Image 1 (cartoon, helix red, strand yellow):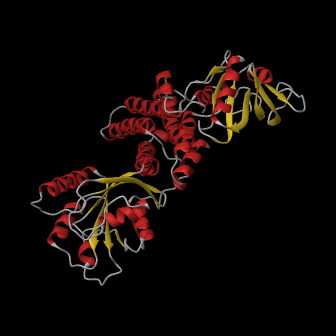
Image 2: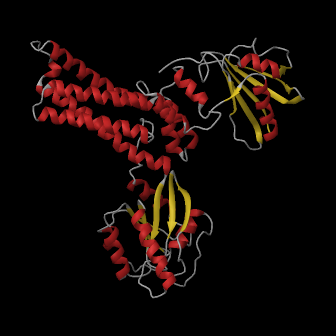
Length: 459
């Protein structure tokens, strides 16, 4: 898919369109230096075209109306630039008017407005990065915590590409051996002997299944997890919601049934983003309004992935508590033993028999959040996740690995039932195609367009 652009030069604002200390307009293409020289004069009178790569010039910007602002212009020469082309980055003061006027000056001088993701698209097409590295740029910008940022940065450095290619290389080795045996069946080829071939195919299948499993865990880091707080009335659900949110999202009173609607917020618990919902207390009630709230709570309980089940440490387990435990015991759930600042009456071991992840805290005193964070991380298997190892990052990549896994499983089954090695090799070649589509080495134009639709203008 590698190639170069021969005609136009693109320009876009590459910093947020908001007031700030510095704003940047980026240009990339064969006329980038010439256009910059038309709108910028350095204090040293040295032109951009005369400046070596990885150097900057200080001076003033101007257009047909006159001076715009002071600026620093950084120069990057092909091929040692982000896009692989001649690139200019114009940094001026970050006022919206100034940055937009600078962009208009670039366009008036001969550049055209860049499309969404076009700088990174050019980097991909010019061989500066793989498709997985390009996708990692979006994930790095959108990262919401240390682990998600580390995973995106590792992918940007090529960790996903390298991990996939380690599997592809194994598959190519098996495929080449099979092709040689098919062409020369009388030759003694070790890789095609029954035991070696079976083991190689099994190892490849195991690697692909592991990559898929890591995706499910890594998605929690990138997207957060839908979480519901449940429990009977007055166990402290709303107080917990307010504690995690850092503000009063839910009304807290001693009157049972105060929460009647679902209160929602997105919060960060350590490195984990929770899309959190506080719900009405689960109990039987004759109040028609509260009854509607309880019904909404039960629906949200069924639709959420993670459950924070709250219990009152100062009271014995009630029939409602036991019913809730039974209902959620097979779900991803953390039992939150609240009100630990009061005299304990609850039987924690009864809960532990059905729910192994337990966090004890006092939401009203603001104590014990670290314990909750630890249990959530362990439950979601984030503690053992190596975010630097190369984790596939989106549904496109997952679909490619899933298809490769399916065809490799078919290859394994074909060996088990004694089908011809031709049939096995067809499956392996198909799986290789799926993985090379993931890396971009055999990706169609439609796939590439889909990838770069996710980007913002200017990146």
